[in-house]
Length: 42
Image (cartoon, rainbow, N blue to C red; front, side, top):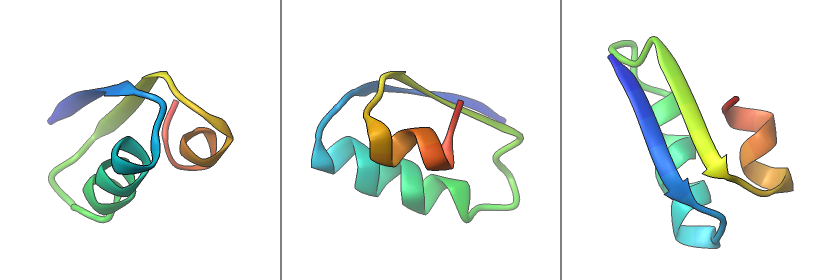
């Protein structure tokens, strides 16, 4: 599953972090993102 998380705040970081742990997620993209989400997603 490909997922796009929109936002650059702490809630988006927490959501992206949890989604990145799922084996069902093939690609995770955050836009615009922040330094924390850049470590987790594209």
